[in-house]
Image 1 (cartoon, protein in one colour):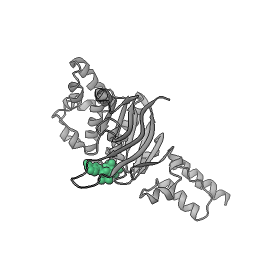
Image 2: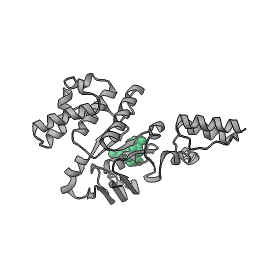
Image 3: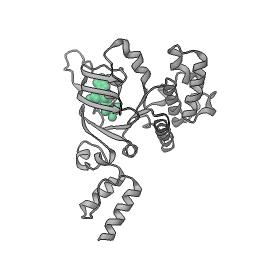
Image 4: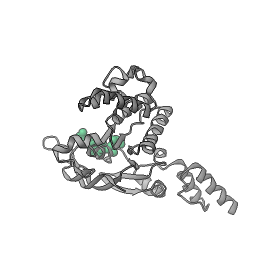
Length: 283
Ligand SMILES: Nc1ncnc2c1ncn2[C@@H]1O[C@H](COP(=O)(O)OP(=O)(O)OP(=O)(O)O)[C@@H](O)[C@H]1O
Ligand SMILES: [Mg+2]
């Protein structure tokens, strides 16, 4: 599989105040994200997730090591525009991402800035709104939409850039359960149908269950990297980092401690039910 994003010994420190020592927010991160994959990044507050995400499209530049986007070095200023077209970002607060008073103008904003011809922009805006299921809202006022709808408009704005990869930094954190479900199913569909690589930063463990891969950050380091059903078996290690585990794994873990012979990696509800049922029958 082709790699879209690669970091090598990546280090980052925010500029320090006068007389203060710089502390590293990223302390040497090596990772590779495959094109077309769905990757979730977990980690406690302050572990470096947002900092890492911002290095993926050159918003933050390494102070040590490298970030490559499709082989392009983010430290090469001449490549920054091309890099930003390939990796789009969606942030937490939907209200901060609205730039226009009409949905279609909002979605057209970024491609217009790239100097793309207007017929092409029309096509991209229509396609992007269709992709997020918001085509009926083309002439609506974005600020009157629900949180989930606003985030889908923000995602459409990124899609209109025709990126290879979308990074969502806690993009569901401010949404109600309905809005979260809307946004999640939208990005899963974009990943499945359009092959767009998705990097999803979240505090919701259940959002990680469907990922191809889960990365766990702790204190500026990448400390776990694997398939969800593998990563979530490290219950004690995750808890010691201040993280929870999905409800299914939590239940299986407690049953194991009570002596029931169930596996820890039955992550999906159906698999978990089967595992418990089988173990009880054996008893
Ligand atoms: N603009 C900034 N200036 C100085 N230090 C910062 C800045 N942004 C983040 N930091 C520090 O960098 C470290 C990593 O922060 P980062 O925001 O990347 O973590 P995070 O995992 O995204 O946390 P959260 O879950 O709270 O969003 C923290 O110690 C944080 O205090
Ligand atoms: Mg963050």
